[in-house]
Amino acid sequence: MFGPIELVSADISCWKCGKQTPVHALQVADLEEFEPDEEPDRLEAATFVYELSLSSLPAAVKAGLASKAPNYKPLFSKTVGEVSWANACVHCGLLQGAFFLHHKPDGPFFGGPEEFSGVRTLLSAAGFDVDGASYSR
Ligand SMILES: [Zn+2]
Image 1 (cartoon, protein in one colour):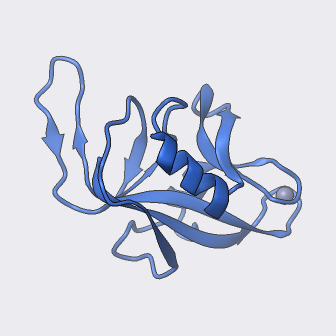
Image 2: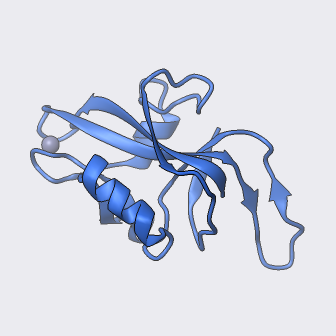
């Protein structure tokens, strides 16, 4: 993932308890995807990244998330089948699924960085490699 890396934040109603909770994702300036035995595929566009694997984040980025987005943390997702970085409701603690946030037309991150007009906070000027994540544009 190429920097700068920004935290994007929005408020939604929790699907379970109905109260307002912040939700977050990472915005990267550009991204290059590596798959075994394939040519690297560079997007050449800003992208939202989510479902990052547990070991993906540098310590400084983790520290930034802990202070700016404490409900964005490693959670088990049945959809993903493992623990990844995701959003918990600040009231009831339940996972706010990435599919709704990124892929439903009324999700706050639908349409990718070009459509997003909410809050952005710088997390890291430099990019870093991750060993597993999803992305949407
Ligand atoms: Zn809730």
